[in-house]
Image (tube, rainbow, N blue to C red; front, side):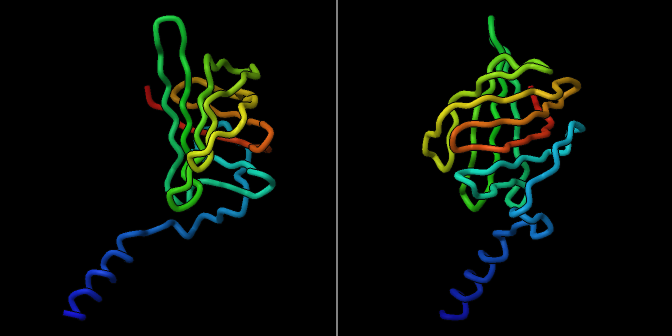
Length: 140
């Protein structure tokens, strides 16, 4: 019985795999080619995605508005999420609904560097989320 439990535990540990080739302590470069990168400082600590999965961006169009929802897993079951309404290249826009680990954080501003051909890239700043950058392929 102990061997069966050990085998099951070992299998579960092997199933939870992280990408160790990505160093979460290093911020990604600011790029605009759709590299699926995301990183920022939260209260001065580096949070970068990639090690726990790729960040996602979803472009949603409604009757009179559009917005991009960005979600980045930055640790085991640890996420940064925010929404950018009406994103346009070259503009600085307030992002809303920002959260980190399911706790609301203040809204801030995102500067859109690129948004075309299924790619959105930019930088963002807020009170707790600073020096942020993202370069994501989005789906509609």
